[in-house]
Image (tube, rainbow, N blue to C red):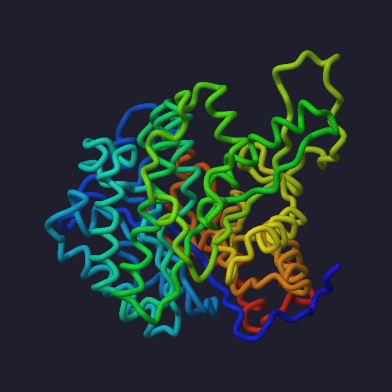
Length: 466
């Protein structure tokens, strides 16, 4: 067990993260084009309570205040994403100078405050004009992404030292194109696999472009890997785990690290009619060499543990679950449905990624928890559960470092309360509480506690005063 007071390595990067659609607002201002999330949110019934990112946390107009709050916390780095359609309203072609000007001001403001930007190029908000042409199911959209990456890095690359090509390509591909729960709202497993491949292809194509435009920068990709394990020793549960965990992790990581697509998962997809009998017909000669372009780091987004259970069998043909999960309570479970608080899973995933793929460096690019604590009568936001969550996960991360995992930084999700995609404003992950009507900001207790972590570069001996 890592003890309180244990220090992180010198130069460890402490940060927080957001995504453009979730915080910026200003969805149609200053020449910005429509994105698929704008279209999705404006379609009745797609987002809880009819919420949308039209105004979101209004970071577009409050960025100076937000930078001041970041500085007050002591953040060393801020992970943001660019809105593709704010820079290229049609996805390609004419550049919207007002969009570039906004990001220039934001990045200059961060640097003036001593905060290094880590910039994600694509965090799911594809320009609607490209979706109208087929979206990432079309190879041409992968080509358009390279044009966008070139524009962004030519204009911003002199000041950005870390670039992420894509955030959670598995979520964009599967939740958006197979499950229909995210934009663009499709339910077609074959299309989802085409999208996944073209996301990876666009990543590989763009890496040398980013390096040319931003030669001093590191380049990587952010993958979501929750800790997944069979619910019992049953062979049935094991096979479910092998597929579920594989599709969310190995399907992306194996080609990124030069191993082709996993044959067992390709066979499973063919047998379940997600792929045609001849398999990966959308993969062209040389694609996988491009996908495996060397990168400087791998970003990990980690949130919870998931148990794989074969739900197709009658109870008498399967073993009862044997993996212990804490009773449902508001301490061991987040307010997000079925998200268990499981810090050991972060340690397990970090060590697995390191030993399995040996990335040059790792960053926790997202980790956080949703609890809806709001201001009390004094205006204080007492979110003790989030402090407990972060402390336990920081301990898990430090244990991984101590056994040799090259973890270089940690970005808490999220800097501020924001629009949680299809959940709308019903979930609050922020270190900063936001009134979504007035846009008032308040540092939560967790932000003040995190300030202590950063200043000491260590896990505090105890939390802030209750």
